[in-house]
Image 1: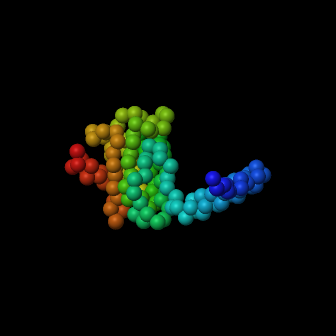
Image 2 (image 1 turned 180 degrees about the vertical axis):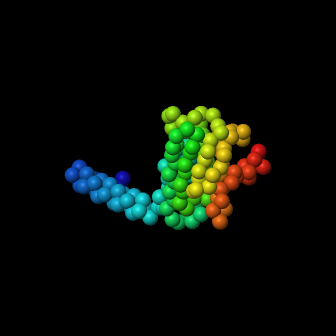
Image 3 (image 1 turned 90 degrees about the horizontal axis):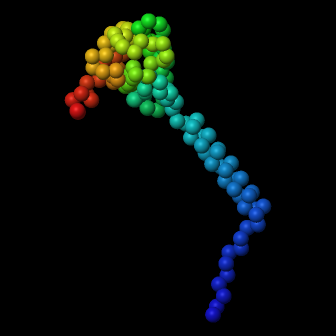
Length: 136
């Protein structure tokens, strides 16, 4: 019966060196991908949904500023969700809330529920996104 040659197994030190090199390559690849991916806001009671320009960073700053006043400032955001069940501690749990979003005032009563989808037009006006209402 003919003998088959088996590939030589690398020495443990060589295996560790290969593993370290592979880990370095993967870490570098992850770093490069992270640098190229546009930044997105961390969800809070305002949840990012869609950017105007998907290739650019998007930003959102959301604050409860006392009483029933909520302030949201966005950059490159076309759609978002307000989840008023996740407001910070101390904020009123029931509406109406006075929402100032990108300097536009909107009274949110809670009549449609405490989770609202908003969409911004190209000229900058925010409105409730009714497209989900029609799909239900």
